[in-house]
Amino acid sequence: HTGNEPNNCPDCSKSFSLSFNLAWHRCTHSGEKLFTCTSCSKSFADKSTFIWHHLTHTSEKLHHCSDCGKSF
Image (tube, rainbow, N blue to C red; front, side, top):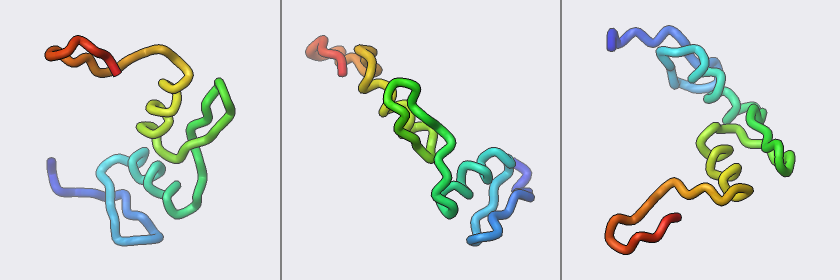
């Protein structure tokens, strides 16, 4: 909240307060994929896409509708 974002991307004008956020961001420039699915070996650059993909291999449902009772 200080406004100080010392982690600047050398490839573009974005800056980040946390160094690991910069590391993830830099993958958008390099194409590096840090997250690999242990079920099918597919790789992903960002954690959220990896998590959504991983759920395709399980029966876990993240959302439950209180109106109709269905989960998805």
